[in-house]
Length: 169
Image (cartoon, rainbow, N blue to C red; front, side):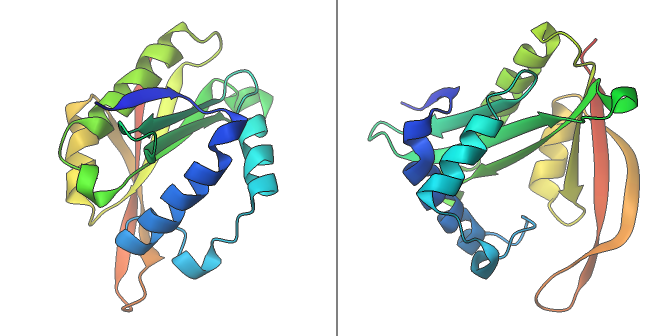
């Protein structure tokens, strides 16, 4: 059984282990494995920063208590865009295609609909990440625009980054 819950300070080590694994497993995240230099102290500070109002940091853990997925949502800070927030999501490869991504995003959307001041949930996805793109479309996100050749992978290929959104109010 997989449990989804808000992250706590004690999750720092598990989040670091999760991030190291997913950065090695996929080329669909911005961070390269060698760029990730998180310490327990830095991770705890990041968890605290994502505990502020209008922020959400979810973790998914398996029956053994290991973090296998996470989602973080942060609002924009400037007054004119304070009603907007962006989320990022990561799931370990062996837990993909089992509904965990949908469950994490649905939890975010449920939370955002109740959160005062949050009206628009946004994300950015690599154009060659078909699985994620179709999941977002299935969950009601719409394409808002593209950053052309915004991503350059280690093999030298360029990909667009697709901006997507969903209004929750």
